[in-house]
Image 1 (cartoon, protein in one colour):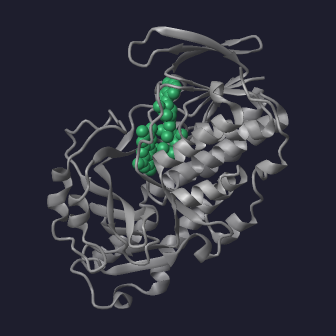
Image 2 (cartoon, protein in one colour):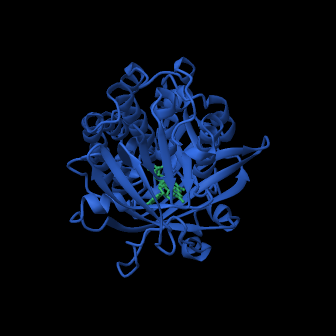
Image 3 (cartoon, helix red, strand yellow):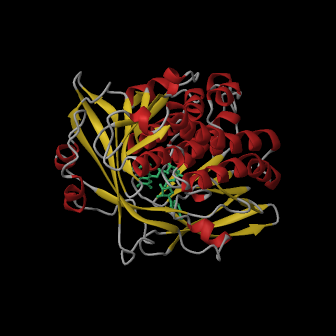
Length: 429
Ligand SMILES: Cc1cc2nc3c(=O)[nH]c(=O)nc-3n(C[C@H](O)[C@H](O)[C@H](O)COP(=O)(O)OP(=O)(O)OC[C@H]3O[C@@H](n4cnc5c(N)ncnc54)[C@H](O)[C@@H]3O)c2cc1C
């Protein structure tokens, strides 16, 4: 009956907590020996936040992150092109939360260990191969660095939440080819800064060719925020983009010159970049939608199933929703391949639509459309593009990705709150 989960990222840990909630034994196998709070900012959309609240994480989440109330778009002079409320301010029943990815991962990890004990996570072991047995499967675990065999585990199902560079996906889809590169690199950093705008706003400035995203992911006293920023700039194709690695260091000098004169009256971008200690790079890549996420007793989940351009704040949220649906199906049907297929049928098409919508710039497309008409800025945005036309970019994306207020609020929660779940013994052994 045990479900083996490959990868203790946001999606894998959420799956572990959710399987515990529905009373299904599991083990998580994580390649990294010691989890550390790596990464920068991510956004959680209201339907994903609801699922984390259902897991009993409301207080921890609200303490760690920022309840984002607006998203605002600006041209490369800092003039506002479009601004709209988010989360509860937009009418959703749950907030949108911007949070440090590492803080979220650690919170999920700690909660899992509290509820299930430390043995449910086997760290420092990489899932290398697996074979189906008459009643389940056997997974071979190897050392991440040297490749020697560490152990073999038996389970009923293998769920691979092994991230954007998923080994499992490569094995299941050997002909899928390399990632699609949009020929731009995203440099990321977190810096302390004075609160800007209302201190609860995500900002996106520039155009597809040169974009700067900045938003608070935590408060530092009353006047300062921890601000996560992303600088998205074109690169020449000779850069090695296929070796995507979340721990690849970049340099401030890679980005600062391009944004040197982006000193807006609401944020001094060169000062923000200049005050950042560590900068990391990640290429703007996604992968083509897959025709199925399940094969036999193995399923892909989270980024392993659907790496997408980080546009529209959807990546981590979709991994959380995957985990909740998969756990519900396994809880109801048992740890059998049919449960994986049911998850696949429910989740794959909607998420694949998001991959495609993000390729068309998602809601950010309003910036390019306005820049085409007014490349040198404007005195009055309404003379460049009407409010209705600008709103349409955001509305179209929300409709294509199932993010309208009506749709999200009408959806029942996937499993329900954890307090209603049966109390069970620690999972896995
Ligand atoms: C170090 C790191 C930093 C990141 N930083 C950001 C960020 O700043 N902003 C952002 O938007 N997104 C970031 N992401 C991606 C983001 O976490 C995901 O888009 C989203 O949360 C969905 O997560 P996931 O669980 O599907 O994948 P991930 O969060 O990528 O987790 C995958 C996990 O699987 C493990 N793993 C991989 N292969 C194996 C294997 N063969 N066997 C066992 N374990 C394996 C990895 O070590 C990792 O812990 C980061 C991911 C990582 C791994």
